[in-house]
Image (cartoon, rainbow, N blue to C red; front, top):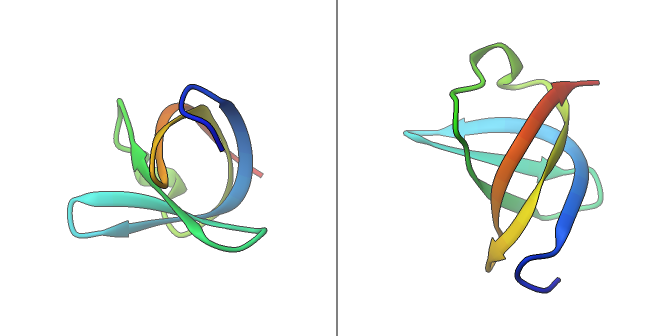
Length: 66
């Protein structure tokens, strides 16, 4: 992936301390930079839309349950 690339991914939204990450359905994981805390979506399958901003780091535009 290239920095600035838009992404749409599905996976399991998990929390690790004060950080959130997406365990991707296709394997691997992304650390998430979120504007809001997605309490209702933690430990559930979600669709994530955002921008790739660095090594395995996503600036999240939206998270929705699937």
